[in-house]
Length: 451
Image (cartoon, rainbow, N blue to C red):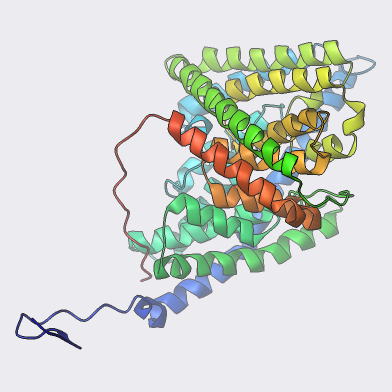
């Protein structure tokens, strides 16, 4: 049988291939772009306000409050009662206010924008977790806040909004909020791409509204940071030393770091999910117990090393720069103790509190890299970058995002050590997948379609 331009000659006529870009030429898509651009401004303003509130509450709880109660300074034991109180607040919020948002032990996923009625619970649970020192980051609450506000606002303006359009608007809102935090719309784009699992022409069609929202919203984020003097709260490092060209021994270390991060991340995820199974059965008391564990670990670290408990508490986002810059102030023993205490506190926080898994993973990977840099054949900058990328992919299982994050974080030096980061990330990714039990594949979701 011969084949002609229209299909097999003599056979049934074939259907012409559908134009994958036809959606872009519709008026509905132009409306979606307009809506996405408009919502970028208030979404990023709300994200900035949330991060600023967390930033203001942290010193209020750990510095101003003990002095107001008559202490000369912050007592060594102070984190214990504060984190038990955090456990009480989060447990009650989760039980009585719609779940309080995403379960961080389940990883990072775009499971759809929450309704407006659920956002107060999301914000309160996240504030009680992050401002009291729980070892989680703000990215998951920001994703929920951005998506929920975007969809809620559009639904209030237009009744009967199609679900696919709502999904596209929600993704754009989440995209804008998380991009402002990560410091780059490019990072947000890769994160959305890998989490959503979209590919081909449809990937660009879905990403463009989010890019527009994040790009315009970043102007508000930066402007508010300059106007208030608080900064942008974005993930940045300063005064990064120049990196040398990767060496053969460092490629060997990339294999070691990838293996170690893969096993460490798998252990963290399994322990967190095991603890979560007990927490969900006794939500309020179990969350208080997890707060007690985090507080006790912080006190133990501070007592053993003489360093402030704040270096073990919180997400580690603001501590990444000081860890890199002042790495010589840490002995190998102190770094190993930091890894142990913060790793266990990370597991406890993932199991019960509300927040995101990204920043603690970055910090743990960085601390592990700094500890290994004391060994021969491994430079500090390369070890730092490989640890960040490998632990990030171990916890998130997003290889492109992990490579890009570790590279952009270190600027020009990151580009130099990128080959090492790629090797470490690939090894960690394969190890994690090999250690993860097989599950039934998820059914592909329908692509967003503008009204």
